[in-house]
Length: 182
Length: 182
Image (cartoon, rainbow over all chains, first blue to last red; front, side, top):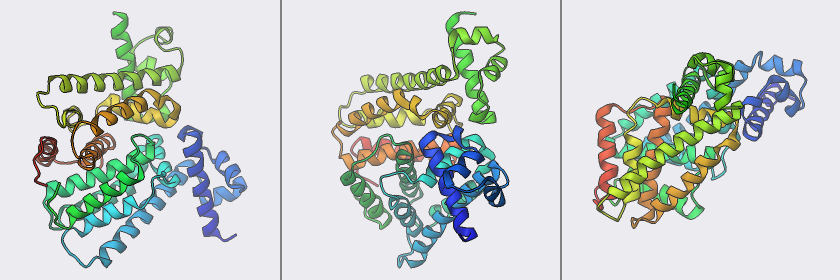
């Protein structure tokens, strides 16, 4: 097994434990067992639980940012492109919570200081959203509604059925394109 | 000290620990010490850590629901009254995270099954929001944006400055009153 894929396997195992058993059950021993990797093999990649949580946060943040930046680059229209990308990248996640995302948030509560990478990136893309030519009040509402969807699916409450979810995504996207209909 | 106020004191101490040290540090001993109450005194109110977390979740949920229902009853206008109340009750929290709210979410990760009361109530008021006469896509966006604000302030990322926060609240409220401007 290549080293990178073993690392990914360990991160996925950690995410599964958090999702299914709660963040309190996240230990290095549990992760090694869940991944079918020896404790030594795990320690080679993650020397401590903090290193594992940090790895999760970085993996999720970087994946999300890469997806959003790809959309921004491909977007032909300047105005609203960051808001559009933010809506699209978040909504594509599907209505089932992504295990890695679950782990991100869950982990933060155990070690809030590990939020660092995510917080920096979040502030950075919010700055882009605020300055991509839209009315800042409307772009902020679009961002907050998108975050609201993400959290609802993360926690599994107040879920939207697929039809309403698509309509919400379409309406938010229309707004980024300058359509004035509420 | 009256029994009710000691209970409140214990809940506040638990919330402070979660907020300042993380959910992993929430133990009955730590709560007793933080509240300046004997372990026996604490156990009289909360026989276990689960009972304490359940107490927190119920306290926060009931306080929020009572506030929102009061607004609905006082509202002269039928259409959009639940959406309006949801925006108002959430935004009044101030831009600093409320300690009890922090504790609610933090606790959920340790014991997701204790989410019960909150989840039921959430589903119940979402039903009201969906059926208070507004376009359901717009009322859903208002709800999601309101949740997004709440989560941002809970986690302390992507915070809005006070001016933008007020403008967002005003715009969402206008939408509940049937004003069509995005």
